Length: 393
Ligand code: HSE
Image 1 (cartoon, rainbow, N blue to C red):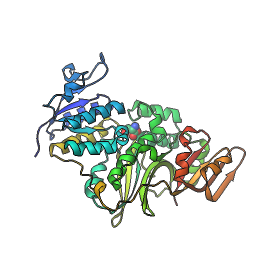
Image 2: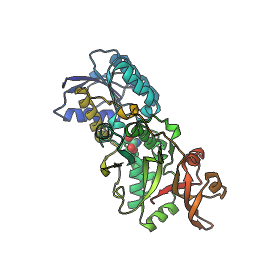
Image 3: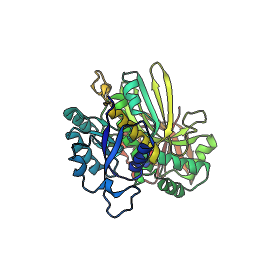
């Protein structure tokens, strides 16, 4: 049944305003924003002040508001709002990937316990309808792999630096100006944002709740001119890719830069676009592409969730309850390009099965195999002396 939904909105930043705009430009949706809770007093707002409140309970305690749309930046406050709203039996939509990833299992339990729907399509891959696709179309165990460009900021930086010769700092600055980057851009460039999204997608791809800290992520912050030259000379483009797949009776998941060959599906995915490649047992590969960041693309994903709530849609997490699930593991070897400074790094990472080795006074790299558990233990994001990228085999 399509019912008129009254919304309480938390946050009026890039995503909150995007949602408001998209909602007002979409005729066929039976929902209205009644109240908006914001933090900052005295800020000029593009819509009348009568909509705004600074008191969260004005929304949370208002029984006439059926749905809470949580679009704020602070993950801890977001969890407080979302969990309170679910406990009150309200429908909730959210785009807060860090918050959802960090509390995924608990949020699942809250939905069951309080019989309250929680939708978060906008939290992963922006405007690409990936979560509902994984939930509904792939509600079976035929799905074997997920690979995605899940972060718009890093794809924007990689595109602008490789194709337009922009400096890394200028490209990041542009991504910030355009509203793509997180307020702490380390989350984007070090692969954390992509990892939070992957954590959520892992739940819907394979029915597994895995803590973000168990998943290896490495970003593009150490990418050097030498690494880019290596890629260019071989005709590759570098993309930050979130992976999860079944292999040898286990599920692995990690975020890492990857050299993409010219025929690769991700090769031409530019700027803030995201893309997803699914591999399934009988249908082989499927590819989806769409804007992964920015006010309106993200707002449109939130809008779609609101519309779905008006038809009483909820995620059923069928794969979570499935028997015979394959466990998550980090015991899996990847073939990597490893640029390093100190020879001890190769021992520390346990690099083996080396097929290429380059050594000069200015540049050292190998192509070889590294176990994901070693990568995770080495805290690569805290180091400046190393860059790793996956090599397509
Ligand atoms: N910072 C994120 C990105 C925003 O660049 O993809 C969208 O989740």
